[in-house]
Amino acid sequence: MGFYDNLKRLCFESGESMNAVAKSIGMGSSMVTGWNQGSIPRKSTLKKIADHFGVTVDYLLSDNPPPATKWDSKKETSEYGTLTPQEKQLVDMYRELSEMGKMRLIQAVLNVYDREKGKDV
Image (cartoon, rainbow, N blue to C red):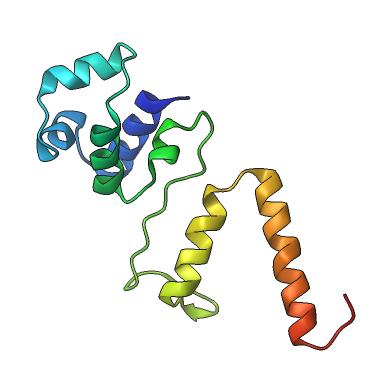
């Protein structure tokens, strides 16, 4: 995967065409043709696209991104109830990490949890 495949998936998930997204960020449909042929947009354009979809530029350029999930506080509930903005931020950050980064974060959280609960670390 790469930029174009990630963009295509985001468009599909949001129900938007690539041309509509290009137009919404001030680009023409000829840019979409270029992206389809392998060109990568400038940083400023990548940022606009990322902001449009609520993802990071790293996500757009990733070869193996996790599923894109936009948080909607009105819909985002689980067996634990509605997530707070801080909880959502943690989940978003977690999803952007590599597998090694995820393991490190989990270990750090376990260490903090053990200290909070008075367990030996």
